[in-house]
Length: 390
View 1 (cartoon, rainbow, N blue to C red):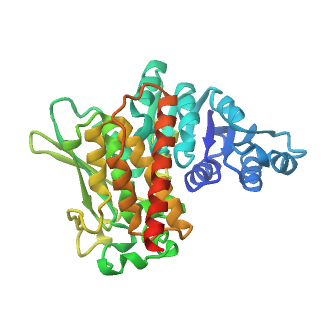
View 2 (cartoon, rainbow, N blue to C red):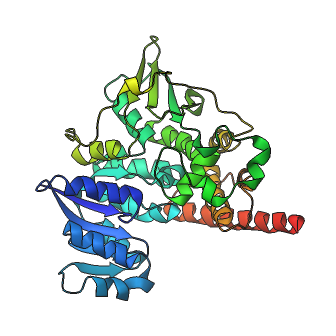
View 3 (tube, rainbow, N blue to C red):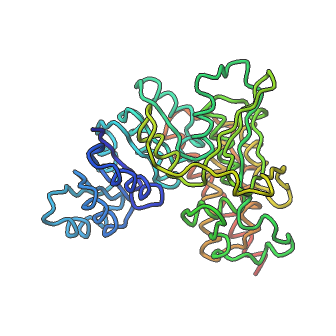
């Protein structure tokens, strides 16, 4: 029986992982479930899963969590130190699904202590890719990304002679909810519209990232660090059917594509059962559902200005990648609160990236220092933008 800990247990990825586990009784034992501040949601998940421990990152909600778990025998804990201590507990599978840079520290600790790290926190790779890889390598553990595109690449590249024979990789993007919307209406896009993805069911922040294609920009950086692929060998194509998740192209002219239904259950199931495969996790893709074929187009730079920022950030170095991620988190949060228009997200990210440091990143403290600097710069840019608008 495999032991599993899930960080980000109340989010979309965490809930899907718990659903898979519940559907295979006797195969998994849930050790720790962790979340941000949703005491009621975390307690319910912990009770349903029979978890040993439930941990909230926000210590202010500890009393509520303890009350919800009263009489269950499930240990309650809260605060950043408790989160890191829980992440240090050895398990067979650690699901890292805390959203944003807040998930960086526990993910790095999980990487050293989970035999398989099922990684859904892309910011950990974007901001600390080299650190994460070193931790996984030195511990002898296995990192398996559960983003659909990177999980597809993981499967495609295994045993395929990547060194010197891989010509390029293709990451696909659905194009989000505004793939055909007139560009002259983008300034009027509302948070509710941006969060309404046509295919995937995701949280607000990542849904907005999909609308701007910043999610794909960050995934380009992620692919670079995860698989040691030069930026110039990573391309992105808009593929609205979301049936093909990644393609590996080799120097002999062969190309291999990963095809599946658009459901996070597929990569999660792969990570949970690795190295075996999960039976019955999802249905196989029925290609006859696409009588008009599968479409692939190059991204429109005017519609998706965020995408090229990934390549600019990688050219400048890791500090710039951290800056881009931080600027986007601040800009998206401001958009969701109605402080800036949709079109300002890309503008703010570009401005902050232009101001990015060229300094070296050696430790997690360096990551957090650069992240804080970039957030402050982006907030200043928002203030200037609003003054001009006012």
